[in-house]
Image (cartoon, rainbow, N blue to C red; front, side):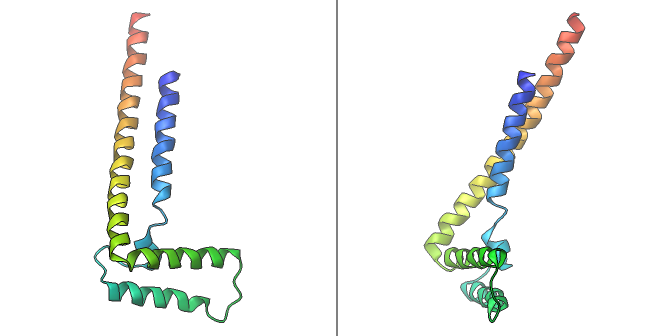
Length: 119
């Protein structure tokens, strides 16, 4: 039971890491990781035109804030470099948590098998 609890905690950690990056700046603007500054600017303008002449409800305000934040980071070379590094590290951490979860499941299954064999 303790091993299963630890596996569940690891899985929740992995989910939290992945959720953090679901709001990926590149996805928000609809550009690739290799997008130029010009492409980022064009995507930002295209994304913000949908908000012109529209009353903004809470959901649209949140979307607009995400677009503005993505543009702010991706249009600044220093901020983009830091963001890209953190993004890569987060993906690696998420992968590592996934590997740990699998390992814990295998170990837990093996321990259960050993207990059953001794009985």
